[in-house]
Image (cartoon, rainbow, N blue to C red; front, side, top):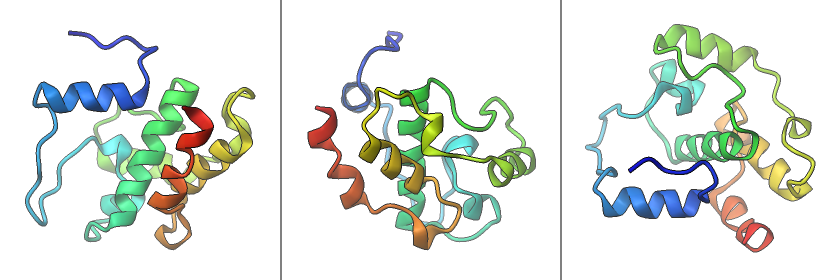
Length: 131
């Protein structure tokens, strides 16, 4: 079934898991949507846990704003990479009704430098603000 735009991210993940859309990947395997991969993966660097934080941040940004800060329709990794590195992303880009701490963490998840990204704990700590 088509998922309604108003369904929370948490519900979408549970539904996807139940209908088998989520699968495990093998070590070293590149899989996923280019628009949600961090620049380092598009540069051919090995995957890290911080890459998952980037993807989580991109998904949260899209849920909150209704679009990514770069064009996700482009399937060319080079074009997507340049859109990502040139994107000027700010917490002010997210709607005013989103709590400031949520905006800060989501934007920190999208930092191009993996060492500067928010941690998964930072992200999970937001649950009390959005539930």
